[in-house]
Length: 143
Image 1 (cartoon, rainbow, N blue to C red):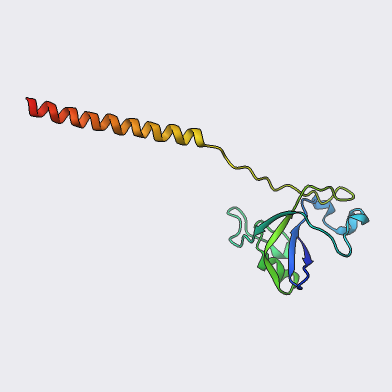
Image 2: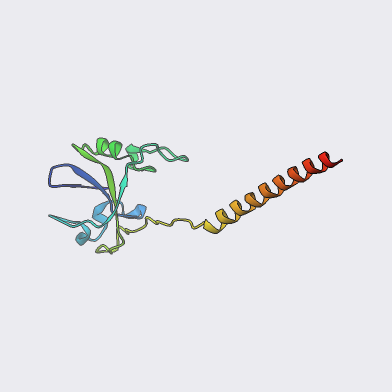
């Protein structure tokens, strides 16, 4: 994550995207990929995820973050006041190809048909059970 400083002096972390392991050192990437001066960042604002990944723990010494714990990243990098959120950059291509942004996928599942069928099935079963209880009660009274 790349820290940017906002107008009020607060650092905002930006996840610019994926970089292969052999290109992690900024010196191995195209020099025009380094942003100098003011810039405009377009992406998704996301809250910090301090809980850690359920499969792996963060490894701050190696710079491997499996959860986006903004406070921990800021502490390791020695940043001052940091916003409690980060920005996932959009898919705008970077000079030299890296980092590759826009990898955050937002997809909401559409299970409305399954929900409707479930509730209608439950309603039919309840009606059938109610009819059975009423019919059994009437049969017992008449016998």
